[in-house]
Length: 198
Image (cartoon, rainbow, N blue to C red; front, side):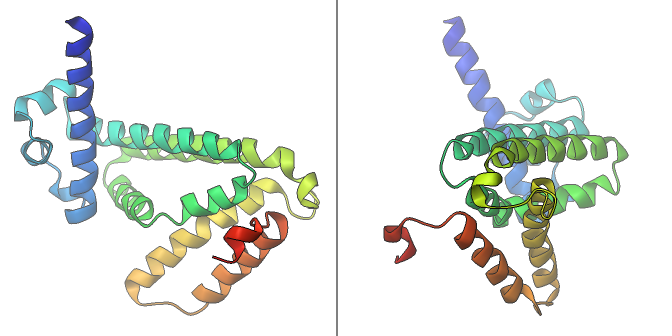
């Protein structure tokens, strides 16, 4: 009985975190309220407040949960033959970028959340670096000329900046920069012939 109860609690908590993310993506962080999250998650409003004493605690939990999931996915990708491509795919996730922008906007108004965002960013960047750095020599890349950390930073920032600028109507240089990264990936992590022709 206890284990079934724990599973139900875990499922409800997961629903609350997902509902919060959805509300942020659809209506912005300002639309997140205990009642709104409860309605979206199909739980009692009191349950949201049972888990989280403040909205900031809820936001922090959403951030940490998302970071844990991203790192688990990246660790799996690290065991593949294409970790750089996995990093690029992660950086290009439209929903992930939109949610990050919401959290960055939120951090401008909620100082307590800045460190949580920074902590998550460092954890993800470190996980990526640990998966890619050991392969640098096999890619034929010189760590002095192009440090793995610098390459990851660029590959993370380019899609986010494109997402931000495209939302404002600025697009000059986007396709050329994306093509540049794609050529780099094709050189260091060539796709198998079957995928390259799809």
